[in-house]
Image 1 (cartoon, rainbow, N blue to C red):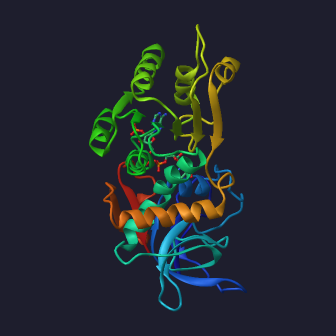
Image 2 (spheres, helix red, strand yellow):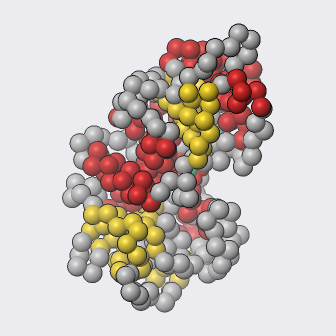
Length: 319
Ligand SMILES: NC(=O)c1ccc[n+]([C@@H]2O[C@H](COP(=O)([O-])OP(=O)(O)OC[C@H]3O[C@@H](n4cnc5c(N)ncnc54)[C@H](OP(=O)(O)O)[C@@H]3O)[C@@H](O)[C@H]2O)c1
């Protein structure tokens, strides 16, 4: 069969032939129709993701849309290594097999499920309840833009959106952001901006796509100094680390605030939680419109398009 194949961690996948999978006990074959090129797919393909096996070759892709042998249309994940989803046919167990509502088209579902799940699960892990306020750190990316819309759709009182790209940041207002914060200002101005926004809007849950110095500054704004009264229980949920793998965490931050640090991703969130988040999100999309840019391309273009820099548009390959 035809497939994208990762043959080296320091090069994009190549479009070539690969042995078709054979289903074992408890497994099913899926004919793939669409597979999204998400950040996790790239980090697994370059070997830097914590779920990387370190083995080559393999077919990239963590999720997709396809048809089972009986023609049931599904959103799926969890292909058996070395199979991924960027191929004509793959093999899965029963860990992530969700029937897809008719109203949702294949490429849209394959592109949106992973970035939407990132904030849906993180809000759950942060025990978000309607009426609370949410800070989104790294709100200009695909996942961040969806996080703004999802937080609002789930009843957030206020959303404070922090990001770098000025135009993308400005556009977040039309997606529901009540306050925007530019991460490009110097550290003291940024902390002051956060404190003013938190005083006006509140902050109960932080969804962090960045970590690194961007997270440090947010935590500095939450840190109390001077006259101290018990702070709001801020649940800081770590989702992505595009601004750095490490932070320096001041002891005062933990002692002076009512902060909880939580992770959200494969390993911290249960499969049940991820399955139910994606199901709930798909159900919501049938009645609630989400602003989401994606484009499709034939899988044969995988090498040329792999490193294309268009963070505002999710690329979906069609085998
Ligand atoms: N844990 C989970 O469940 C889960 C699920 C999905 C995604 N993720 C992670 O979430 C992160 C975001 O994914 P995505 O799909 O939204 O990616 P994306 O669409 O490629 O967007 C990346 C965004 O990050 C911003 N960015 C990159 N480096 C930055 C920096 N140093 N400071 C500030 N902003 C920076 C970019 O900002 P500009 O627009 O300003 O360039 C861009 O808007 C990734 O790390 C991904 O692996 C986690």
